[in-house]
Image (cartoon, rainbow, N blue to C red; front, side, top):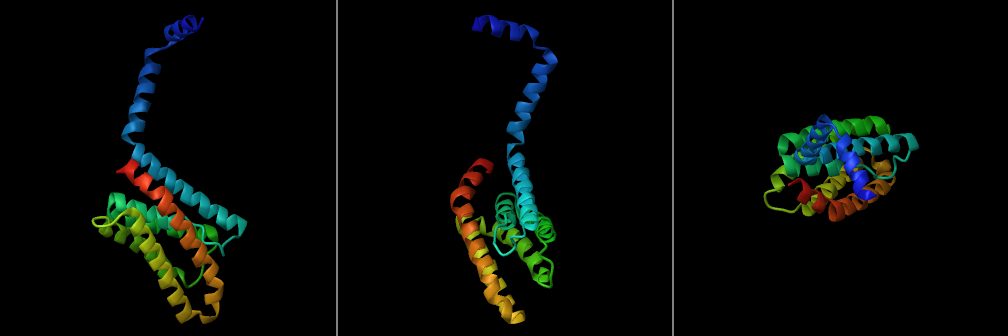
Length: 182
């Protein structure tokens, strides 16, 4: 019975369908790394959109740092900078993070993509991610303290959750993604 169903299925297959399926499978294998990167970019934008809609701006959940650092690490300085710039602008707008602090925030995320590329020669993705995420959060606390002394205490929950969220990503997810994409 199964043999008969298989035989009927094979008889009904059109050569065009077989070629189309083969092309799709080859394309997936050839472009798999870009498919994953594009999926990560879409996920980053989705998280930014959700943060804005749910009004949970005081929680440091964002995929921009992770994506910018991973892109810089794997694909070089230009890719890291461009992805960092585009995604942080999208995140800031969608999340409603609009204020003077965008003056230093936007360049910081581009810088993370750039630095990840340079650091990739000597360190693991986990080390690079942790160093850059902790570093950017320390810099932001210092700038916040210098400019908005009264807002430092309000900024700490975001900083703490951002470091913890990104630590989980860089410890548990980034090494596997680098192996797949490298």
